[in-house]
Length: 390
Image (tube, rainbow, N blue to C red; front, side):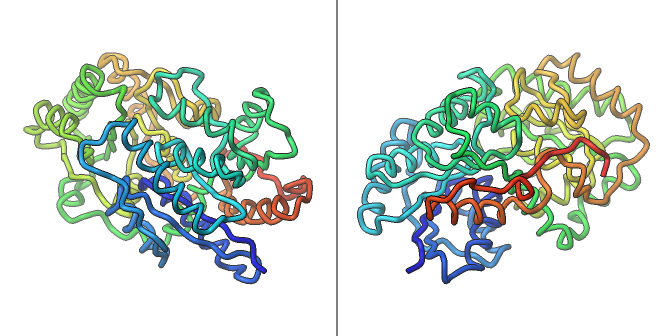
């Protein structure tokens, strides 16, 4: 009989990073019976991602309610997942990352003695308020997880330092690189309005959405973007603005009237990858972008004070700059002065976060875990990151 596996998704980043894993499990129907559950945190965006992999959720749990607090969402996901786990009793439940969906689904599985596999385990900022609540979610999920898929050696070191048995850790690389390689031949041109505005100008891509950036931090980021564009007449800034009304209001008030700043609604993931692929520089408070940009060789200024993706900083792909407008503007100016062009070739051997085979490693490690075999991955199967140029 195949092993039964439930894979739980809530947000767009979870769908991006788990779609390659779902596809990889589907290659072995004799070994695994996989069910994909969607809690619907980012329902429409999640569907867009799965569609690109020709995948569908097996069940839409329809958990999300407008205006729900973190506590309410956590309770709702636990309640629904409790019902789902009772009905199927999977052999393994897989979650990815650090969202409310991840924490609540892992807790529900733990309450039923169902083993939890955590994809992208071991990321730590060591500051419970940054990012909030993700840092707490990550730490709490690790406590109830039996199978830890660490993306890098550094993440595995964090887990071992917290007392996680090494035999329960597999270093796989990050599945976001698998996803980017999947999309590589599907990128195509930018949207005509953006492409026409560029006309030989350099593109800066901006994202800002984290809770800890709301208010003064977001205002500072927008002021910095405004100054960067003013200081560099050959630069166009493109900012896909998060749907949150607080983010929308601040971005439009400060940046909405500049002819070389384009404010877009939240864009489909493939369109976002196109923008990233063409960018000369990225300003972001996103964790995922720090992992994605190295595949394209794009420098990143991280508008946060701490990052759980230290590999990006250590390898020179990213720089922590906080949100002070003067600091951000100066750092952007330094990057723009040094770079005369960016290679558009995916650097499969140069990304410290992955090599495109993370999903395969997750399937192999899951098979051995479910058979009570060790090691989860042989030394030659384990991912070893690199800072080389490829």
